[in-house]
Amino acid sequence: MSVFDLKKWHEVPIGGVVEEPGNSREYKTGLWTAYAAIWNAETCTDCLQCWLVCPDESIVIKDGHMAGVDTDFCKACGLCVKQCPTEPKSLRLGEK
Ligand code: SF4
Ligand code: SF4
Image (cartoon, rainbow, N blue to C red):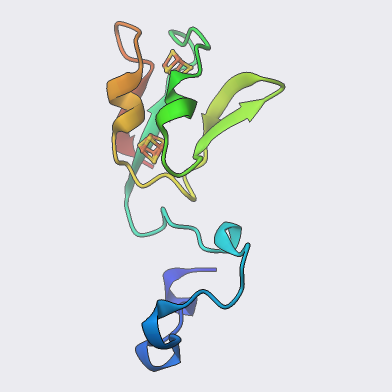
């Protein structure tokens, strides 16, 4: 789904009520931004603090380990970058 497939203003339920519970995976909330968190696997210590703070569940975990960033949902808020304890940072904001 792209931003052009979103409902028009007159199609949105009054009050913005969500009529289809559990549909959050269908709405790729990171599509509007050209930026995302970029991961550097070389310096990452796999501490998963970025996963703890990401408000959009955009940090991808595979088999219990850090595996990257899902740019379909990352809004480039920068919380994970701020939280990442490595020096240099293992996450930075950059163009997708
Ligand atoms: S920039 Fe924000 S939304 Fe994107 S992965 Fe980091 S914490 Fe999540
Ligand atoms: S916070 Fe930084 S070091 Fe920790 S898992 Fe995330 S990217 Fe890797």
